[in-house]
Image 1 (tube, rainbow, N blue to C red):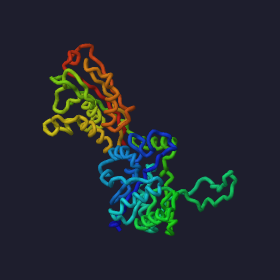
Image 2: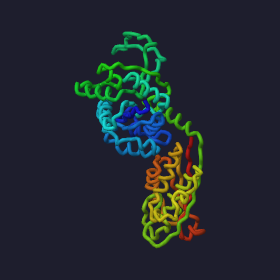
Image 3: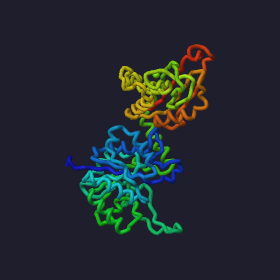
Image 4: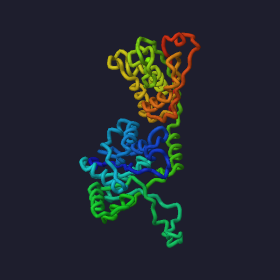
Length: 395
Ligand code: MG
């Protein structure tokens, strides 16, 4: 059965309005990475999927691309282009299933983007359940007694708790079965089915519940989000600090690059690349925190490929190395040392630029400047120096 092709569909088209945040919850940075990036990697670690796609709102494409940039290369390589989600969850799932038709899977797992904790064992059980039953969802016993009530809150019934299950995702299906069920439901105008097993039930397929996991929570409220962040942060339990230092000399020119921002000036900085002294110091701070050498180790100056290179390549690479190690950047801090140009007017643009290049919140990026009271090479206006510090968390 190892030739069974298993596809993955992650549903990320919701708005997450209950969280009240500035972006949908699945894209909120949680322990340094968008929540959906944690979800996708947890799933990818659980099974060698043959294809995967994410159903997103077309408006969220930039957020989605940002999240994919946070994935390890192995997880990112799995993803087909995202499917354009519909107005309801049911429509989004159908669009995602249609996008997977070309891959010809035998089985599909359908999972909520806001459930970042599916274990490898749960993913394996889901695949087994689909092979065995054709339609199945993970479920956990109810710890609370459940009451059926009317609009006034009057209790109508107390269903026996032993027979009840709270269902989760990944829900697992024979691909042709769930594709046909969703197509029939859409053609029949049946809407409002809130999970995919309900669609299979509606289509008359026998559906089963297999053993879920209490830890496989869905992030719905801000409280859930904070708890998820605490769990993910605890997993990357080691704090590392790295430092970086760099100097570039002035040369004839009319602008300098600092933190990826072009700043008009009466001179340029000379160097092999664009001589962005701040990005170099920041990249070295990250390499230092990882104990992975320095910029020269990864981008040898002897290689003509890097001549005139935009230095954001170096910082982006260093940030990627943190993610490849399963960690995240807590903060970056740079101090520019020069008499001129003045940094203050450009500080916010620099912070935003570093945040974008390294994929973290601008609130976690510090950019400061100082002079040396006209002492030394910086004081004589011969060049610019930069000190940088990076804090990272690693598993
Ligand atoms: Mg340099």
